[in-house]
Length: 74
Image 1 (tube, rainbow, N blue to C red):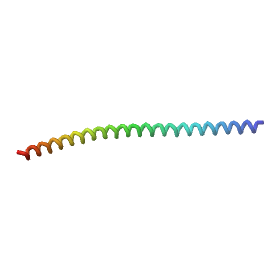
Image 2: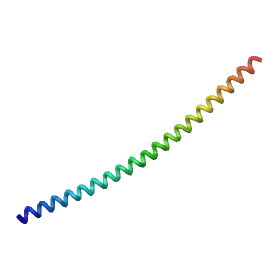
Image 3: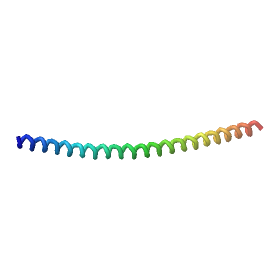
Image 4: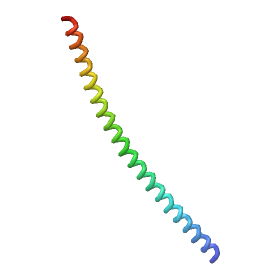
């Protein structure tokens, strides 16, 4: 009986050790996901900024081309 109880206690201890390891791994995964979300948000912000810049630049190019075309008519 004592041997069985000892085995049960050892098994229980192993389960707790595994549970601690799983918790640590989950914490690392969560930290990685949060860091990746920050990076993704940063990339999205930069992309939106670049898109606005390209749009403004395209409009400037179109205006300049139109002015050049009009000037060529005179």
